[in-house]
Amino acid sequence: MRDLVKTYPAARGRRGTPATPEVRATDGISLDVRRGEIFGLLGPNGAGKSTLVRQLTGLMRPDSGSVEILGHDILRHPERAARILAYLGQESTALDELTVSLAVETTARLRGLDVRAARAERDDVLEELALTPLASRPLKKLSGGQRRLACFATALVGERPLLVLDEPTTGMDPIARRAVWGAVDRRRAERGTTVLLVTHNVIEAETVMDRVAVLDHGKVIACDSPVGLKEQVAGEVRVELVWRERAPLDVPEVAALRSSAVESGRRWSLRLAPDEARAAVAAVTGGAAFAALDDFTLATPSLEDVYLALGGNGEGLVKA
Amino acid sequence: MSAVPLEAAVRADDRERTAEAAAPLGPRARLFPALAAVYRAQLSRARVARIPLLFVATFQSVGIMILMRGVVDGGDEARAVVAGSSVLVVAFVALNLLAQYFGQLRADGGLDHYATLPVPPAAVVLGAAGAYASFTVPGTVVTAVVGCGLFGLPLGHLWVLAAVIPLAGAALAGLGAALGLLAPRPELATLLGQLGMSAALLLGVLPAERMPGVLQYARDLLPSTYGVEAFARTFGPHPDWAAVALDLAVCAGVGVASLAIATWAYRRAAVR
Image (cartoon, rainbow over all chains, first blue to last red):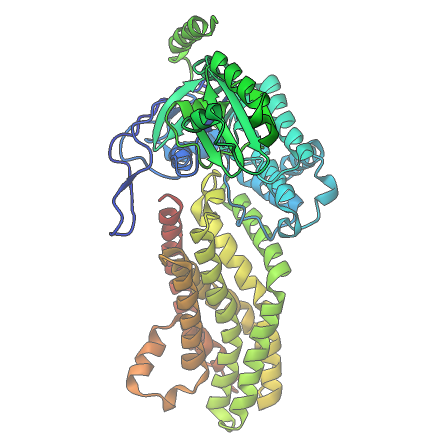
């Protein structure tokens, strides 16, 4: 992929009801994605991920800025987007009433393959994703994860050098997820396929992505490898405390921790420097506080912590 | 970690190669293969999901004819009722259901799927319209045959349905697709589709001579009217084939225009 650079500038306003102010869904975003890379867009709902992707795939025109994919100017030639990328959106309504096999075959034909090639690719992809037993069932009758996998299959046929996947693994069981990432890795290894992945699942982001751009309120607040991002908050450790019933606030050390904790019910979550964390753990595991403690964990920072440290509000991120 | 300098080096290297040839574009789907693929997929979805609705459409038309038997007594009016009821099946499926389908597809993002494939907009619209129109064939034929039986009309010229269904189908499906794609909300698309069908019912089935002048004008504006009239003429002992051809030509003209509008509306709806 010859990096795409896009700048969506100031006035990306989406039409809203007159009562609500204009929302700037993508606000001057510039990103380079390299060929053969799995590049992630991470952010909570409403961060502007989907808007960004719609602009990339030619579904929406930015108010200003530019998009270049593999040497093609997508703003000047929006029709070329469909010929270099395959897009997996969040909706499957166009395919819902088709059988898995027909959905995949039709999509392949609409990507310009002739009947024979479309059928051959369909059979290969269904086999690769272990969907063959479901081939003759309508998408509508499948479970959410299976349907998602069938939609993913439609994104794979007709071989495109760039895959744009909007939350591809939503609702999938671990086996289906593995099938998805296996298929992505194979294409990357064999053909240098580039993948742009939209997700709000931090665990998935950490394991599969080469680089991640963290989006919040239409802006890129960080862009690096997951390891590099985590180094930004390397000085911190996360302490999770779960109290039996409620926190023993009569213990002075516990009362002191409360100010830096994010409370949700019986659970406290704290980001502390290593020696502070050690002191906190010593305080709660010894003496009076221990009797009230149900469970505690110490963890190195995750992408979620990065996100929080960078000023995101953290809501809407999924840890699963 | 050395990640940062390494990346910087890679990036500089990349930039040098940026001038290198752009990636080859994937093939474009050509109009007819794409149309065939969409048609086949749409026909299969219609088979799965719309068969009960086809029964509804047919029963509705047969029911109307039974009802009208008490009102009209043979002759021109009977011909109009049978022809109108038959074309009503086309209006129900091609106009009403297609408007709902496209309205829904547009509202919940289903159009993105087609819009991110290199397929000509006309293929999507014509494929769907064609599939819905073909889907009306059994219902229309059954209605026409039952109608001829009820009113004692000759079955000899029913072959004209082979021209009436595709041409009236094109006009009505084009209208339905355009309404569905232009309606800002799916409920509105449903409403417009229903209204269109009600218009086809009232203006097509009821004998024209008994209508007030304003409605006669409205009747002339509705494309299904010409399908109805063409079909009704063929029940006579000596059909005026020139008039039949003229009526069908109007249907064809409206069909071309409305499908062109629908294609334009699709383009507009796909890229927001």
